[in-house]
Image (cartoon, rainbow, N blue to C red; front, side, top):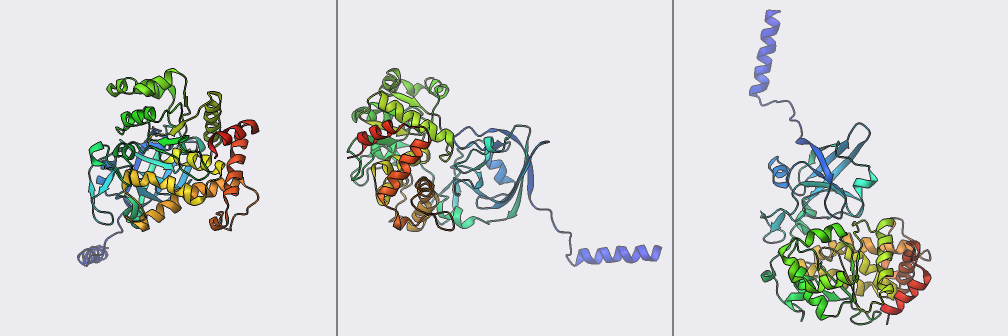
Length: 413
C-alpha cells in the first residue's frame, strides 16, 4: 500500500510539473434581483453596478448564459449579449449597461468614461420582461460567461453610440440650428403630411439629458397646442417640478395647466396592447382639444417616439424612404451617425431598429404576405399598404373610425 501511495504521489507531482491542471470553472456570478428597471424597458435591475460587473472580468460584447429563478419559476437564457445599448431585435434578451462606454473612434479602443445606469440590467428589448415572466424581487439572477467577445463585432460596430448632455458639444448641421439638433426637435416632413402640424422631440419636461429648456422654447416658438407625452405619468411630472430647472419651463407649465398634455406613461413595448391603447388615448385627446400643432415625445425622442412616428406617417401615406429619413435624423442629431459617417453602422441600425418596426406594422395589413422569416419584401410594399396597416392598428387598439378619419384629415395633405 505504501508503495502504491508513493507511486500515486509521484504521478500527481509529475502531472503538476508538466502543467496538467483541472479545468477552471467558468466566470459566473449570482445576484439579487432588485426591481423592475426604472425606465421604459421593464427589465430587471440586478444588485451590481456596471463597473463592478466589468471588474469581475466580464466585457462588453461577451456572450453569457443567464438564469432567473425563485421557488416558483426558473428561466434559462442562452448566449445573451452584454451591450452598452439596446442592440438586439425586439423581444431578444440582453444584459445592458446603457451609455457605459464611449469610444473615442468607432472601431477602435474604448474609453470608459461614464455610467448612466446605476445597476446592470437584464431585459428583453422592447418587451416587458418583468410583466411577461412574473418577475419578483425574491429572484436570483445567475450570469455565466460562455464566450468572451461572442458579440464583439456588434458591440464594436455600434457601441460608440453614446451622446453628450452638454449643449456646447453640438453644432448646427444641414441648415438646422444648433438648438434644434440638441433638442432633437423637428417637424415631421413628408409629401403626404401637412407642413408644421406634426412635431417630434426630446422631452420638454424631463431634464435628465439637459434638453428640456430647449424643447420648451422651440415648442413655444412653433405654436405647439397639444403634447403627446409618451414617457411620463403624473408622479413623474410631480418629481420634475421639484428640480430647479422647472421654473424655466414656462411653456411646458402652461400646456400642463391648460390640459393640453396627455400623460401616456408608455413602456418601450410597442407591440403591446397597453402601448397601443395609450397611443389611441393620446390621439383622441388631441382631437378633443381641436389641436392644430401636435408634439409627440418620450425621453430622448428615439424609441417610443420612433414607432409613433412610423404609425402617424404611415397613416398619411408616407413612403418608406420618407419614414426612414425622419427616423434616422435622431441618430444624426445624437450620434452624428449617417450613411456618410459610417454606412455599415447606419445600415445595421436601420435593419435592427427601423425595419423591425416596419415589419411589425405591416402585420396589420392582411393584403400582403410575409416571407418565410416573418419579414416583408419592403421593395414591394406601397404607401397604401402602410396606410392600411396604420389604420388597422389604431382600430384594433380602440380608435373609432370617425376619429381615424378626423386624425387623417388633420395630418394628411
